[in-house]
Image 1 (cartoon, rainbow, N blue to C red):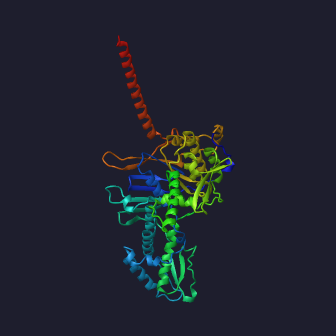
Image 2: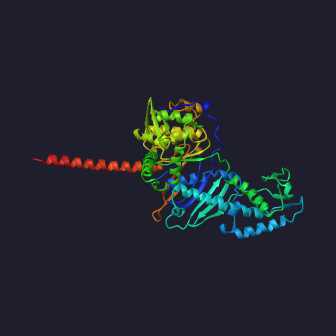
Image 3: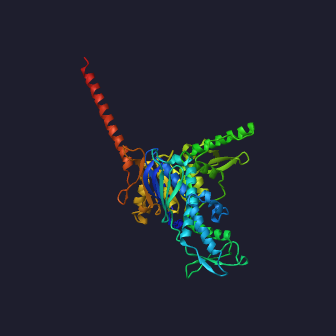
Length: 516
């Protein structure tokens, strides 16, 4: 049984996240392009790069450190000569301009050369954003960045287009380089000379609505002028690179139940080891997505209800026939996920594999994930009966209708075909959709809300995989060609077996009739 819901319970979804990623020689991925949609689906063989691509997208949406909203005090030190490859030329132009600005008389003005602002922007983007993104990619995948370069290739290349801002990056095993960065389109900046007493702190930039020029008061002091220029570019840079930081990415890795049980065992072992030897047990570093997954659940506030609490609770009862919760043992040190059925509460390790695998998903949806965020789920169908996979597909559609962006990796033909049916339902009018026993009028996916990508071997000549878009059309929905190939192979094998078994039976019958 599926769940109906009245249209009054839906409100307008936010603008979808906008991101296109072109990937070259990254892990097992030789080439491919992915455009994020409200629902993005990765299919393909095992070890073909689906998780690599999913973790890469998660890294791109990683939030900047909180302190980056304001101008960092050590930025001038970061831009010092010995840390930047092109710092010598930048410092020459910077000091040349500052020398001119320091000659100004009171109330005199000087316009900052656009070439100097552009060079500062290049420096900030190269030194901060590119380095930050590489750190996030490295953390997510849990390895050195050089290990992410495809075998027998000298570099990996990423081309990002987010909200029409293009960034081209390459990493050669030692250094990340920016081939193209977003155009900041900075307004002209004009400095006005003032006395020390006439300049306020903090620094304020004033935009003239008529001239389109930004002005700022400065004393004739070298360090102050340098700070003004860097802060101006920094503000423009942060607004372009990280607009809308209330949009977060949340990653649910595969084998969620196993990860939590292993962590529970390790935590107990670490506590016992410390009690005996008074030092911490050395535990190998986890990939960033796994570490974030565990820490998010550890820090989860069960009193907080997310935007998706009601929807998650409804489908939780349907899929799990109970509800999930979270508790702590040993003075709140150890995390304990709980499952409640009627009046009985039990730890997750005593429940079925379906409950233990889906529990983190429902806890995230009820208490963590915010509206307009990106939720990445590896193999959401794991341990689910095909009938429940259909219901899970409806949950994903419902979340998308409510403004969540979802990316999944899957090996399930049932899940994919049910999602395909939801695209076909979009061609029916709301009244007709209501006539289906299992659906409400808002249970549908528009064709342009879905993207499916197949990760397939490139060729016999070269190892690795390429990413190809799967066709979605108004008559057939999402193409099932990849799974049909397997069905066809099984069917042919079955016919062959029937034929051989039939021949054996005929031979046995002949042998029986030949006996005296």
